[in-house]
Length: 135
Image 1 (cartoon, rainbow, N blue to C red):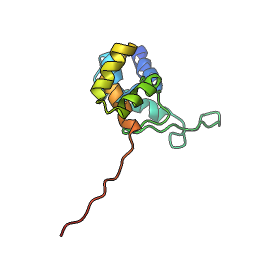
Image 2 (image 1 turned 30 degrees about the vertical axis):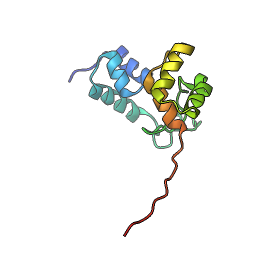
Image 3 (image 1 turned 180 degrees about the vertical axis):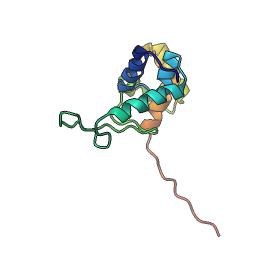
Image 4 (image 1 turned 90 degrees about the vertical axis):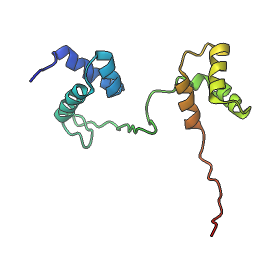
């Protein structure tokens, strides 16, 4: 069975602990995603009590939960400094594409269109539209 060198294994584990996704780690280290999963699974199985997340010295840290649809405890959005401009654009009825273009041209925004789109989608609340049942 092929093994990665220890420094590559530690790179995988270190980047994952910094909050990088498995896909991003695989892309940056030029590895297959299955390889990244294998080494992370081996590292997780070494942890003392993965169910509770308690540390070996008896202390416990509060776990952070991350789901695919919403992040809790993750890094702040790159759009957060421009929240006011984005909200003004939404109130003016501008599209997300237009808001992004204005941020780039007027405020030297370095993020991507998709970052603005995700930010806008997270800010919007779902409004239930009433409907009538037809028989």
